[in-house]
Image (cartoon, rainbow, N blue to C red; front, top):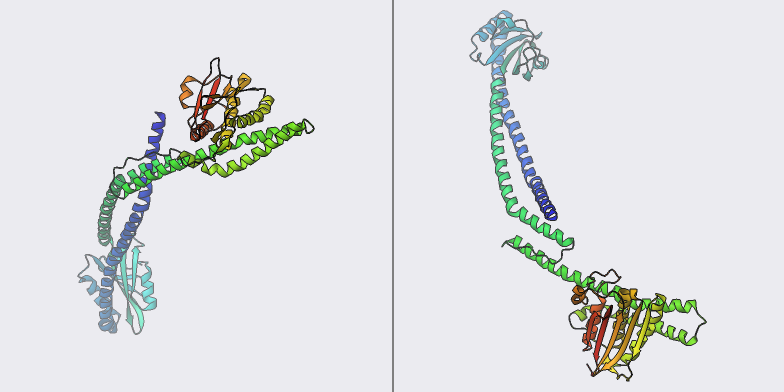
Length: 483
């Protein structure tokens, strides 16, 4: 239950991660684009409103200053001042624009709003620039006196080639700023509506696509973790359904390939060990007593050579194991002296078992056994595997007995150990590949399955059971007739 909860929690986290990545990868670019559009629109609308106001003030200031320069400046200062007072008094836009006349020292001479400003210095930079450069200049910013956001345009008044004063128009930007804020708020509202629609569309897409992808991803992760052969329920008819089919097909093929790989590795590790054990055992025996019985030494060396050759043959044939699985494995059939081959295996293992404290008793029948048709290398492989298993699983009994005899038209080999035996519940499965049951002994669990396959290919039977009095017994029956 806890495992299922962890799996469900992991699936939720993966979906959440997919949703977050999708939002980052799809919504964030749109959000950035909308942000840029809003910024550009805000800058454009601000520039537009301020530009219109600045152009209007400049035209008006230039027109007023041009009239003064052309008609009133030549009649002297008195005429100029009277015309300035008259202009400020009759100024039509005084409710929204202030008209000022400023002398060359930067002080207000006349203002359309209040006479109290006379003598004050506005302090904005465009006044001094207009005086020094004899050009109309614009100021936009905060009024140094009041702190209010204003726009001011100063046009020079020229008499005899010299600037004697400045005609200045000043207006508040409060109304314009309010219009700009309204326009920007409107574009933010439109951008927010667009963003909401994008988010809703992406959430619908996530629910319809990303979450099923998370299911497929979870299944793929389980496959990569070793759950080969699992299948995903396919409820889709579009490209996602095709993806699910491909995942299921991949899972099945990976499971089959992994099974073949495991069987191959297990077979290699198990089947190569038996002849290597014989070679090592006899090598150590000869090394410890190099001056012993010459006949025994020759026989030991011969066994080492035979086992080495068998190893070479087995290495070459390892890849044929898959053929055995699908029924295409072939034997190198010849006439075989089964008793001689079995006794050779007995002789090989007797000394090895003796060193491990296990006695190996051998009993041959009274009658002469006829040769049978078979593969001597494969049959010897069966004998060695069974003897090795008897030592591994029943060596605690300290004794193994083996016999060969003729029963009718069948030659029978029995190998019995005197260990704890096989639990009854495990008997039906002991010959299955890779099954080891409760046994803690070394091995991959493939040896007995290989033995049974080889015996079956010879037309015989391979049985395992518990013997009376304790221990397990393996019975191999091989027909005398040709296979």
